[in-house]
Length: 530
Image (cartoon, rainbow, N blue to C red; front, top):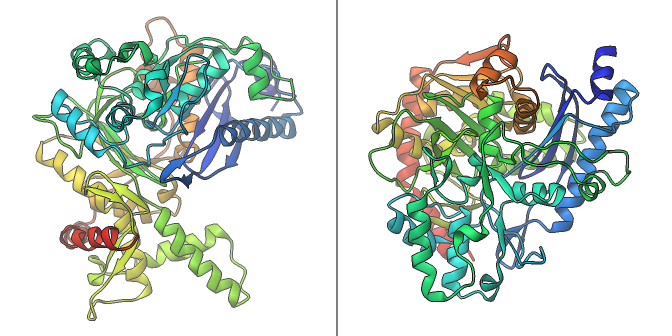
């Protein structure tokens, strides 16, 4: 306790703050990279005029409340008022569209990764680059705005992501970590910078429009893990901590996306390793030994925080539909006058799923709250479908919802399997894995590969960006990020692994076949339920 107190007072700490879809989380670590305090703030995106967004007020009040919650945790545990920190890092949901004019004013409401409104732009850019450009990428949003003839486009001076925006306002530095940048515009893993050939192609594409900018002018500067990314300004310190306790001058690491922080938090940044993050959305990352044979619309190519190529299967929908169904059971319990905690309710229903048939008894569920690029759905309509002779019971119903949360992910991972992409280690993290064995068991079945959880997995991306801040602050000369993680973070960490069960694998394959054949049902729902 006394050593931790001294570390806090002397600034031998690192702070990571990550903006997730439903929660903003802060994790403060000591000089051994162990979490010593945390804070959080719940928030939710909103659908306004057909756009999934968060307001600027949501962003700043959420950040300030999250930081204050963490600072209060420090005060309560150690009796110390937090005035300085060794290094800070910010992370957030990748992709999306935040466009600003020369005065730093937001030109249109923040368009998050969740919006599937850029299909034409994404398709044209994919063909132009011969490189998959997903609908949620920033460059797809920009080009769709160009195609739409949106008036604001000509006034763009800065284009960035949520993490980049926060970092910019707190430091004055318009930069991004390479992993986050790779979700804006394709990266050349050799140069660790935007792909110059594609930059030229895009500039030629928009040249007839006569804009005063080209794409190189408005994208953030790319940095890699370990680089200095500026310091907290006086204005930034007050913006982060309105109480005035936090001092300016604290160094910041490059802002990274939730993909990069997930890789860091699971020590899966080296080749032939991977991780899968399963929460509101679900995505799997596999660090590649060599490029894929061709571009696949289902597979994104992004990078690690040091710029190595990563195959990413990103699915917009994961646990939202499960949460909705669990709330139905909560309402039922309340009607009965039964009090049950949220963790216990989830555990009860998740464990019940283990009793279900391996193929879910013939049931199908589509958990689409929003559209899905992999299955070509512009919008989402959550559905639960069965035949009269399906084995409809609670166990199969819950198993179906859990399988459905991974159904679209499996379609993408099967492509990597056909490309003979080899994975030595796959680590899981996120809310789906909170109930022991259940999410992990079904994930192993979906991927037909062992899935491991670390004891620190619950800390998630906020801890991951804290580690990147710590690496920048305390790395030895010539120390790579892999060395830092292996020797100073995970050397003695506990790992719990589940291998796939053959019956589960066969059952999931049967479910996946039924799931694929039933996609026209989901499409019909999108077309007919307005």
